[in-house]
Image (cartoon, rainbow, N blue to C red):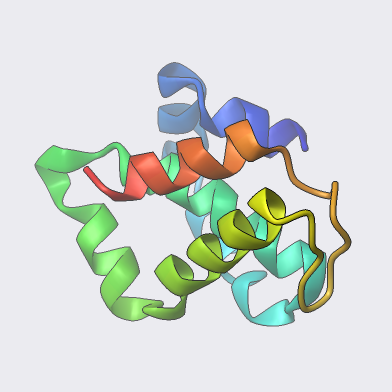
Length: 105
């Protein structure tokens, strides 16, 4: 949760990227369940806002399921449902919308 909050702060996101956090967090994408979902949200914050380097495009290209996953979590949260590996209420709607918005840049 701390990384999800930190990733939304531009200065903290840049520090995490420079410290090599992307490589570590990317390895959690394939874990599945809540940890994989949290990793996807954190990566969308860390890389999604970086328009100049195009890293959000390379992230979506390398992990095309990321956009679908975020959309699924959004739909399930709006409809009061859980999903594969998580229960309703595990994710705040504000966080999900912010993650999608950062990837949509």
